[in-house]
Image (tube, rainbow, N blue to C red):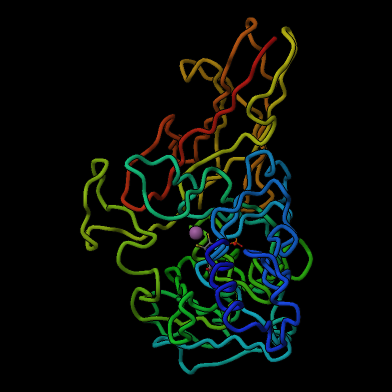
Length: 406
Ligand SMILES: Nc1nc2c(c(=O)[nH]1)N[C@H]1C(S)=C(S)[C@@H](COP(=O)(O)O)O[C@H]1N2
Ligand SMILES: [Mo]
């Protein structure tokens, strides 16, 4: 934030105007004073976020939750992380908003207004888990560049919209279709309108799933601006980067989509495991698809204290990309023994699942409660950091909280 204030100050002292208007008492302004008109907006107010959310970057905006903020069964806007690659679009004209479906593998391009999408196709609502591929990156050693997410780049809101499949059916897709790629209205940080900040996508099989939506509502209301108003692609269970915000286009491709952040090393991990710190060639990096099994203790907060002999109720959520979570356990002895948690079924496919347990402790002292989920293919979360990779993706290590019994 300082960087921009500095630039604006420098401009002000040389010009003596704000937005084309003379600053009459410019000579009276204390040295180093930042005029209100130039002060950075409060992101918590601007985005309607909980004050306990953590800002990782302001250019572009990247804001994460803390574990205890994610205790709600359905994530509300105020506790939902923001991950932007470019600048949020301004002056959105909803009436004239168009979604263009094009690409090598459509019979003929077609476009829809929001009103047409809403009236022409059946609407569906699903609760969908969206986790950033880089969630947990801060733990990697050697460190990986990028936003240093801890545990809070995950959400599970309800999304209402029409099925991408139904819209593609209406357009007419050729049999050589391989992939879809999205295009959006956000602006590249350079301001260059010829560049896209991000344009990712998914194979046809994912695009055609029942739960893959072109959504216009989040938790029953218009999608908040930061989360993709007025239209968003939502593909639960995959890296959230597939879920394009401010959606203006879908290209049906006859090859793997090659938009911004689909190629090189972006959202890719080594196809074969590598040693920490190894250099990996781009051609040896594979696109991340379904996210791995993971869980989060959302109650109580780490550092909780209870009286000796009392039961500690813990709860949280678990998710497993395309799969279901089959088993949830906790440990109070650093993973030596595990006890079962109660685990609920998901609200629908690709929604996270709630777990809870009554934890008792043998005596006074310091404990850690570790939580471990196992998916329907018998894959469990690792207790410590999993496979190191150059960009710091897919850290699904067990979440843990500290507890003091007094
Ligand atoms: N148009 C557009 N869509 C986007 C992004 C973006 O920068 N621009 N970021 C992606 C990434 S990397 C993530 S993790 C999610 C974040 O969604 P959220 O900000 O609604 O939580 O949006 C994805 N969709
Ligand atoms: Mo992301």
